[in-house]
Amino acid sequence: MITRSFGKLSDGRSAGLYILRNRNGMEVHLTDYGAAIVSIIVPDRSGKRRDVVLGYDDVSGYENGSSSIGATVGRVANRISNAAFDLNGRHYILTNNEGQNCLHGGRDFYVQRLWQAVIPFGKVSTGDIAATYATESMNDWSRERRGRDAGMTNAVDSGTDTTDVRHASGDSMTFTLDSPDGDQGFPGDIHIELTYTLTDDNELHLDYKAAFNKKKESALPGQADSSTADEECKTALETPLNLTNHSYFNLNGHNSGTVLTQEVWIGAESFTEADRRSIPTGTLLEVKWTPMDFRKPKELGKEINSDYEQLRFGGGYDHNFVIGNGQGEYREAASMYAADSGIRMTVSTDLPGIQLYTANGLDNELGKDDAVYGKRSAACFESQFWPDTINKENFPGGILREGEEFTSRTTYAFSVVEEV
Image 1 (cartoon, rainbow, N blue to C red):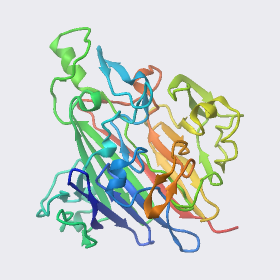
Image 2: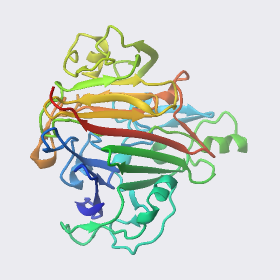
Image 3: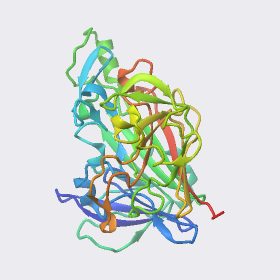
Image 4: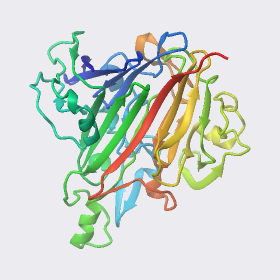
């Protein structure tokens, strides 16, 4: 792995760039700002290296951006209706940042925070050139797998922006975030870890973990039905949780225009019906005989402009497809293919939903290499619990409880299809 400076935030703090490589020439560039994917560079069928995700040249783009490009989204990804929910007899009020909705956690985004960067058996503290020291991590499997590589870790130079390269062993990178009780309006003090692992099979694994830091009473005001200590404590030790990655994929390259000719498959028989505010109604609709049917691969543009209410409401695809009924077996859930590059991506997850979003809201966003990203210039495949689960009794999962550890894996795997 290679670490570099990724520029400075407006408050003077330094951000880092972390580059994972494999033997096939694939690279994944990550930053500790938002625990975001900056680039995924994949050789196409002719051997040309293509960067297949939208992004920015340095951290200032992520700090000023408003579309969560590449970033880790939480505490609750997607939408919560009316920016409020009830849990254990308390009423919690969040920030509304999309009309009446709370979208991706409200205004105080995880996306726009500097996460702690952790290399196996060491930490990287952006802003300091720190001595190497051992660290305990919830990510035991990563430490065991890479025990043979234990050794040097390096910090990002906080003095000046530089192209100097500092090397560290390993093909994985972990980012951590502590989210205190009351953060974004949510109850409970939790610790979050996200480990990115690039394999020699061109798989990028995203392994999420989360757990309560310690038991303590919630400091948030609320309307409790009972004032007993037990119930107050219980309120503090449950919280909604829905983490996802918000990368925008274009398999012909991040600067190649729209994705409407690229083929998508989604292994879903149904999707969650949404209203005009993109909030699920609580009803599951079959994809059969609708433009929402991706059970056989088809071009994204084939039916995106159909006179179909759900597409009119979303301005295109911005819908949760039902992969399962609760967190379950890890399996392939979706794929995307670009005939021009020959690059194919598959998405695997153990979560029950995939949000397909066709970048309907992007508008002249200045990105990497002076690229200008517009409407439908990419597609997102966000693994998740279904949107607004906390307000839908018939929707599964999405609650973290004391004594439990949330773990989940999502994988973006890349291959090349030779011309027929």
